[in-house]
Image 1 (cartoon, rainbow, N blue to C red):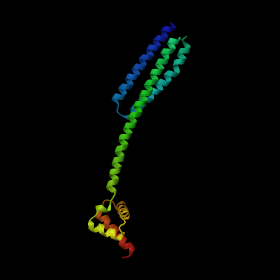
Image 2: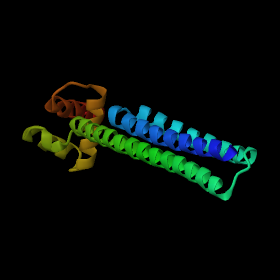
Image 3: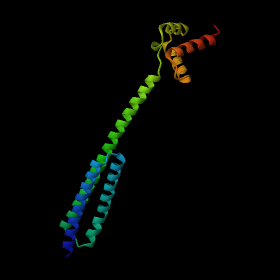
Image 4: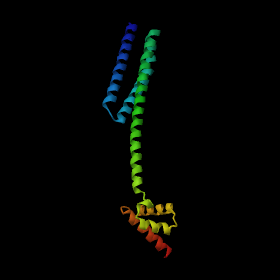
Length: 175
């Protein structure tokens, strides 16, 4: 009778594993958010751990044979494999999502920085000549002063920033 109960338990365990794997697969297909995928993988790992911990107790209580122990081990192994696959899929999905989000954020951040940077090439030739003369052809210094002016006074034209830098330089030099 104990053998029959263990066989029924093993069949029930296998059916539970199959149903759980089907549920996990359905969950992954239907749900697109990473949080739900990670939650499903966490449940899979907890279920595998709980099953692995209770299988030896059940084996000890029922006078188990090597065949029953092997079946119980296979069920635990199957649950562990399901948990590992679930964790792997969840990690890959989270990594893919992070990369997409991170890449688009970096790209948009870079585009924003590019829009905020002024170079001497973006001002009129007359103002460019004045700036080059005042700063003795120090292009890096000119670009730095233009960008400081843009940071301090946003939403102006590039020529306005060049005029402001020229005005500030001549004022500070007392010329």
